[in-house]
Length: 414
Image (cartoon, rainbow, N blue to C red; front, side, top):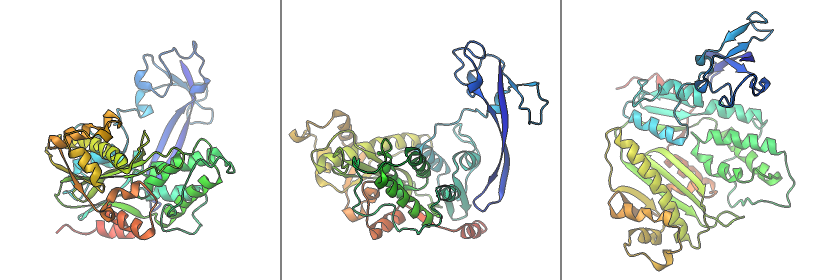
């Protein structure tokens, strides 16, 4: 079968504008195919070449370097489809765990079947990894700069936080509708950026709830995030060079925070030593009738992530039990630790009660933490500037210019 195609050429640059590589991409026009003529049912898209059972030929584009009227055999390697690993925040966790943080630089040697992470993260996900003898910086400053400029907000005044304190977003049924396509694009751009920017993870997820019918109020909230981003382009996650690999976690909930459904928002963070490796902000699936129930559900979700990380760490030779999990609600802790089921907890979905077994078996230990030291607070609600800045510092975020990073990279390891 024959498919028309064109070549697309692109120059990849780094955050300073320097050329990293010249890239060429083959784009096949699959929409020109006709079922029964160019492909059979099992061939859904030309791009999924690893499923093809027949040789594919592509006709050359008349303006291309190839001779018009000829065809080229489609080699599977042209699609670039290798068995990529599943993407997501858990990839960041696996990558950081594999480095063990003690090396102070990214080890390019594949381990446990992983791709060479230096190339994979920098070029595929857009994550920039800056190395120095003191540790590793991970950021997406180049991407952040591009999207701020793309939406014309690079000349606006910057703001101190990603969302106005006590600012409530709701469905806004009487609000003025805005261009949904524009709104979707802005949300998608920001969502991609949360891979290295936990400081605006909560508010991006909040704004994403209103993509069906966005209004002027929702768009203003999204533009506020971009204004915050414009002033914090060089904010990065910092992973210092040390050997502390203790696993700890924080879980929190904002009771009835959703203005439309009155559902609560769960927030959680997981650390290896003092280094943030996983974080989450998620609206709960059911309505909690009390703050204790909301916190209990948040603890259960955080515990699930801990168990996954504990399993992954086992592959690297680490064994963990009695993992500290911090919560600022004493009633929720008591509910998890009491072997006798409280009558007031019978209505809670059984899926959340597994945390009681993990506590009883000594996998997780629950500790009370005062609200001011609840590090997951940033993933549940908008905060005042002082509180917001305190927490992003505790999460390990630092603002470093490219010049400072270059100077750090040139330091020698003592």
